Image (cartoon, rainbow, N blue to C red; front, side):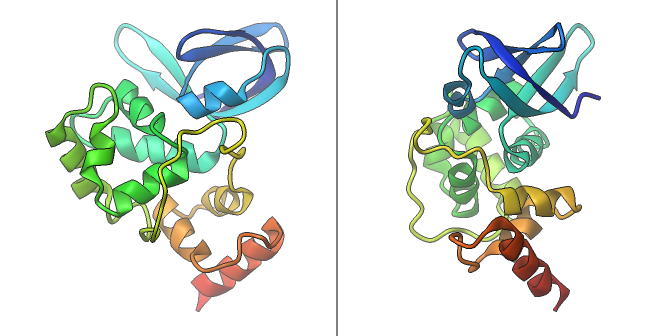
Length: 194
């Protein structure tokens, strides 16, 4: 499996980018926010999900580990394939999509291309308890270079330590986001250990 790619963005298409990694070009399908973040001839790292089917192999890339985990949760829902999951993640930044699911916002999920009302309801029912605590007053913002950070390093670190997206989100709940990542991780781990 290909866990991540790190290289220079050489080409951009409608829903994918090509990253040159030491002379090998990987075509990676990305959500709208990550597409905007990728600049031609600039180095870019994506965490990847290698999706293998009988007739094809596709790479789906995410600028944060939390977005990758949310994608994997989305494709675990019956009726949600990788393209639909990517469409859902293209609605807004990954944390805002997670918040919409946690808050049971079926209307928001239904706005994704190719996602109907039943599928959106299934996403909310199946994942509401798996994505962590709902965020109060979440605002849905279309991700752009200015609004979509490379990811929450503290959240990514907790996921890398083996916590699920929901557990990591809950552990970081209430910890000041202005603190440096290392302090936030320590406080979250102390909270989990209690």
